[in-house]
Amino acid sequence: MLNPPKLIGHRGVKNLSPENTLNSIELAHKLGLKWIEIDVKISKDLVPILLHDDTLERTTDGKGLPTDFNYDDLKKLDAGFSFYNYSTNICIPTLKQVLLFCKRNEIGLNIELKSNLGFEKNNVEAIAKLLSNFNFTNQYYFSSFDWPSVILMKKFLPNSYYGLLIDGFSKDISLKNTLDICEKYNFSCCGFNKNIINSDIMNEMKRHNLITTIYSEKNLKPSEANALWSMGVKSIFIDDPKEFKIS
Image 1 (cartoon, rainbow, N blue to C red):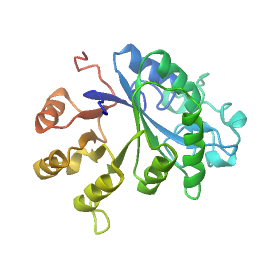
Image 2 (image 1 turned 60 degrees about the vertical axis):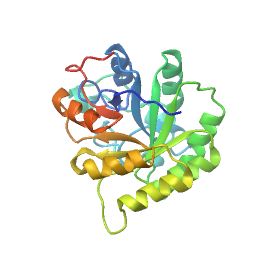
Image 3 (image 1 turned 180 degrees about the vertical axis):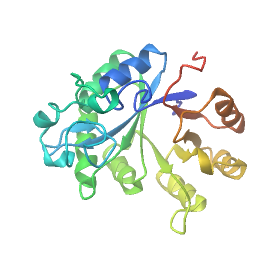
Image 4 (image 1 turned 120 degrees about the vertical axis):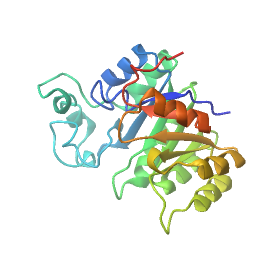
């Protein structure tokens, strides 16, 4: 049974160290976090790497799409420059490097599928191939705002755990639609934007025996987190856990 903790490091601890880097993941571990959320997509040569955005500009000193470059070129980029405003030796890590660190340190993972437009299938296949050949015994689950990606991933890795991410509701995305998909594919959880969570959603999540996770555009205070946990939220993605008591 999927059992993530109350706090999950968001892209490592992105307010304290460059997001989606080994430095950030190592710091999250030092601060006592037992689980980390990471964003994964592929390079031109189909190497699963950690990167949140569609392009390289915001978090590295590079420009363009990651799918325009082989990993040997991507790893030369400075993934710490944008955070520190000076040159560092921090590089874009591969998913394999992160799996090795997390396995060695017994860290659980939420792997968010973040493919570039047009590369969704390639992204899923490359990540599935890596996980199927890697003896990662820690708990982990896949999630995505791109629901077809997690549905496809389950075909490759049927014994893994899965969840949907919901930033807001619309005529195309309703709570009923979300719950129906979770039931159809036997998904375990849903991650909601804090701004849309309410007691009605929580009641339906409990009724369907689904885990609720919460993310936010800003780092939550302990008082805000306690209110969400009291509602029945299982896990909160945190950018800086220093104000929290981590057991």
